[in-house]
Image (cartoon, rainbow, N blue to C red; front, side, top):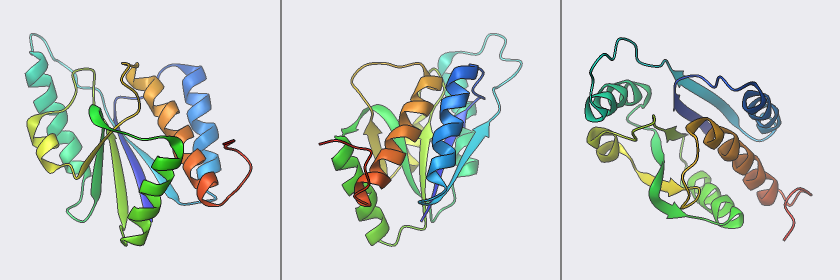
Length: 157
């Protein structure tokens, strides 16, 4: 199974990027994983949050193929434990999912078109996190899920 993480704008905090790179490197042992970075919008001028969401949404949708199973990382999504998330991944693999595309939106969230196109929504927490931090948290949880599935020593429960 291929897994991609679609994000809006680059990670510009060096220590977060270092952590993300660490887990991306570890994930190579378990799956084909890539991070797709949608460049930050320019010339926003007096654009409203809804206008920004719409423009970002168009760019997000261009990265999704019809056969992809898309999962929004969204505050209103389903919450999982780490073990529960590993079970979710296993179900996707068992279902023959070719590409599992996780999406982290911009500062204002997702457009209605992105919500309509999504197959699932997952919440990492009821708390709100900086979108760049979510990238690190997610890549670590994805790595943790694979170690759980392989019964490797990483997750203690």
